[in-house]
Image (tube, rainbow, N blue to C red; front, side):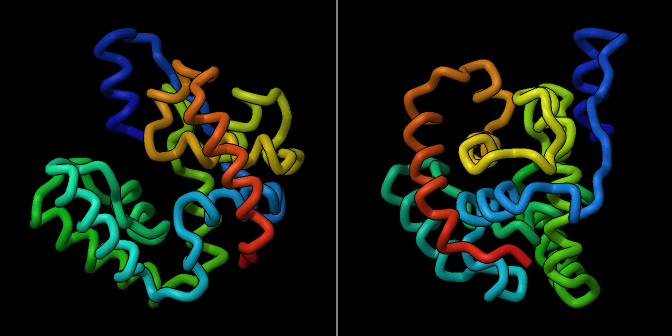
Length: 188
């Protein structure tokens, strides 16, 4: 969040972040399930790493000749977002690996998801489920419908990009896909 605020203040010295922590119980079950369905459907089964998902992403990237898919779990994303830079180097990936292992050993899955949902970026200066719910839907995170939750989850790989393209065909189609997958996911 600090790095994003510094970037925002390069353009606007008065820029502010929108963020409000809410406890796990005050985040819609729909949002928990939507984020897991979109970002990490095996969240409860793995110990920080989805090796099969990483292999699939690797193969997609090789086929395309560029990075088009990631295989990071929610735990890996949390480790990166909380403690590391966004640079893509082997050293940083190694640090992410160690921090992910530590998170998985020290915290229960519910706590990892709670911290993730309270810190993830959902748009320009919009951090956490509560700020996102209020920014996009003018309601608290606890009241998000399945469709609203899926819409937020779909934005996560590129929130600032999708914030500027709310009528994107991709967003609409992917949102419906996530709504359809949500019943297959159980949140901690």
